Amino acid sequence: MASVDVKVDNEGHFTGSRGSWFVPLQDNDRYLTWSQLGLTQQDDGLVSNVGVGQRWARGNWLVGYNTFYDNLLDENLQRAGFGAEAWGEYLRLSANFYQPFA
Image 1 (cartoon, helix red, strand yellow):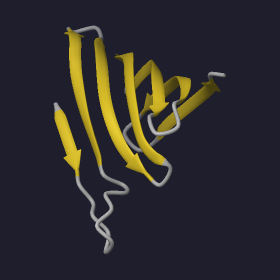
Image 2: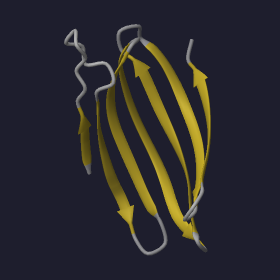
Image 3: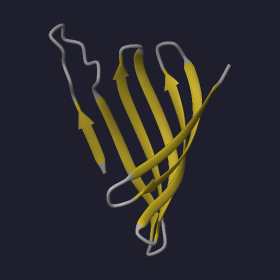
């Protein structure tokens, strides 16, 4: 599934625009393994990211984990991210850790 969100301010800048491509790698009755590619134009510059993760149903909850690699392309700043999530019908819980690379 691909998504694109284009935003243009009064000065013609695309700050806040983004695009992503979510690719299910394995989807069965027990779990979903996925990858995601993305580009986002932020105030600091263009950010690319690539990630993989897995989600599965546990009772009335959807739980999962993921890892991402982000790169602020204009500055060549890179970081790794690790996350966990639990989604219920009325509540979403997420935790993330980011580690910058030197």
